[in-house]
Length: 387
Picture 1 (cartoon, helix red, strand yellow):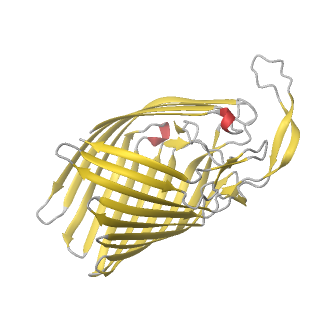
Picture 2 (picture 1 turned 120 degrees about the vertical axis):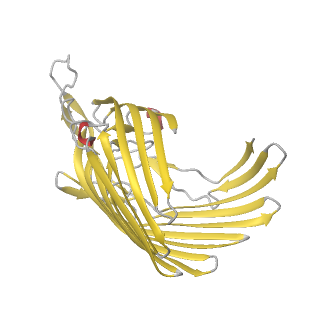
Picture 3 (picture 1 turned 45 degrees about the vertical axis):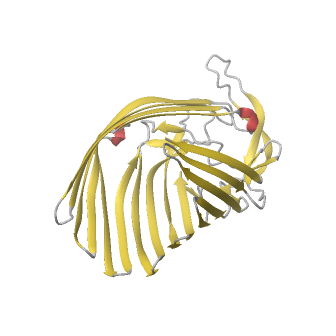
């Protein structure tokens, strides 16, 4: 398969106190895949991927220092796997990805082995586990001191730091309680190496834009599903922890949340009518609290300048991400009607977003203290036509 995608993003300064940013990414990918299935149900899969990425990103940080990330690079990788499926109660999938050439200097000649297995020791109960190593050479440039990111730009990892690597461990149990009722519980642990972290002490052009850190995350995920026509009910809950460390300082990353859950209910009314409701809940994300302001001396960063600096207001922040935003929750309702004609399929829909008008914070302006919330109660209508 061949795919081409382009992304462009830009922060408009007057929407918040953030400095201007612009990001552009162009991705061209060619895939070749082959899969062989044997009579005993075992499978062999082989593939090759050729990818080129052109990424451009520019921004001004909080003291007005400009950063530019521009890089065009290509990646050639081969991958293979073997699925052992000949036994009804046991299966194992073993494979690896090998980067012949990477997008970065540190991404070439790297193996990414992976293995997963399933063992059904009772007809209604299955144990599953997985382990794998994953390399990531495309990263987001996200400042942990921001309350909420308006958008997160993507760039290729600079050559002066190693590409990110994650080691995943997963284990869980799937239970089929009765007909149409399933329950699953899963534990996970992720060890993160060479995480690129924005340097919040970049005061001159010579200072690096990114620092190399590390981290870990772990937790439990619970899922219950009831699906017997005309009802479909799904409830999920996640209890998780996440940490990052840079320069021997450990803190909560900005998307660490202790509790998260959602409840989805669908009802098939018949004759093409489907009603549904979705309720989401997330406990508060961490953020860095503002303590006050003071006049800070900054050197002249203009290469053609006189070398003299000046004093500018500088936000004095508390310990990184020790504060917590309020919890987020929202209820959405929708009703759709599907119509099938001889040549086209038509879907008509009406939705009520944030039914009880919850004031969920989007961001606040540290200069003025103004709070900007997400969508209030909103009614929308949609028309979808497929030929």
